[in-house]
Image (cartoon, rainbow, N blue to C red; front, side, top):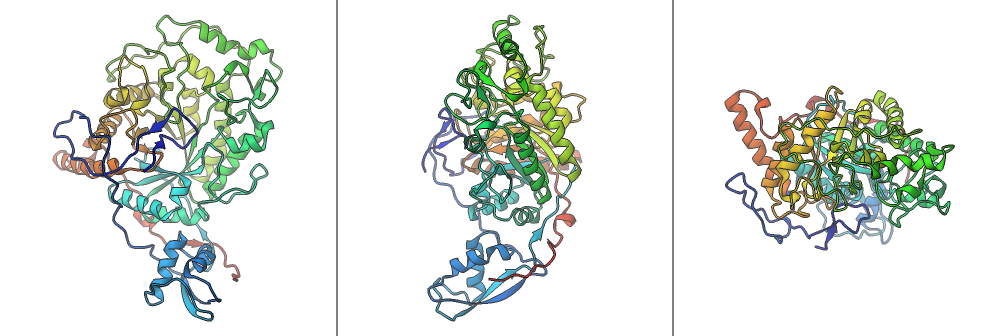
Length: 560
């Protein structure tokens, strides 16, 4: 298997080692131990019976033309059936036509097409409380729409998962679903029928979380450079370390596009909208970047807050260069060498705030908070939850990070249901005097969660962290590593968790989940309450609701 990046976003710094999946025995003690970097190829999850056809579906007789094949006919009919992939429909066609093995059809041959729907599917959101305990994995759009992706979802459900995060728009700007908008031209579609896909997720009794990368949108700035952040020096679209990838978060057209996409997804049956990259760029020449919200401000006022904060410190190193976090969301080697001296996550001290001069004019955090206020007002009435992915380092409340990203956690918490800090241990470079942070999951998960809980206290927002499901920069990645993260996050107030692996390889969580569930069941039987669980409560969706038959749109005349 070829080497892969930690995340699908362009980043030369995030190359991961090849991952394979021979199950490793769990360590006999809770101490993490080094495991081999090379393991055998992953075994496929056990196949699960194909999609059960809903009431109201029917069959249709098709007369083949010369040279036609079953796969070609399956692609032609897919949008009219209850099946999700053309290969799934091809198998069903072979099955109902006498278990035939060949693909090529004779001219005039009649074959039965199963699963024909009388009208397109209309799927509805399954509302849940914001403190519903999500246990999720992440899938790219192309994976979610594939046969292998469907197997991953089914297997994740088998081992105890109850949710899946899937891409609607990634940070390269690719939109995975059919969607019409003046700012979006012809594009590659992977999830061709979103309501049908969401119905499949609901049929597994799972919560459907649609991820939308917001302001990092390479496609948009390439096609519409006037909507990009602008360079003060050359009056051209601004580049982050040479890459043209950032829109201007204060551009109303950009904001309206993302909100329109989110509303469309909500109306297609998704249960939760997850905003990622809801921030300003954190890397590159910050003083050269210009944004619409700064119009009318003197140049010195536009750049002064960042300059002041980079020059003035509280004497403890907290105001060094900003943490250049990737999608992982914590810090890179360019971050400060030490962030305080806290070593026990049980009782973090309230972060001190440097008494710097008050910035003049609107700030990046004002733009982000105002956008979220608008988005939340438009999305909340649809019944979906709104969750936000945020940098893990924002828990340290460093003014320099706030001035660059605009992620004011206290302000953001007012306009969402869930905050999902990206607290992957391997990304905490140079922090807390720990040489190998990737091998200290208990410390960094605990410290981050405790800080996020502290700064959001009283807001009512749920903290549901992204956890590490990849072996990058750790020698101890294993099922035990997964268990330590989950247990620590729950102990420090987290409700649920999300696993990130850009290659969608969840072999270690697959092993850990049944072990965690068994341990919690055992603990619950002794204590008489699932609240005593060490790993997770085991929340499930209301089965009666999600097992209901498909809702169909008004019948339309179909032809072929």
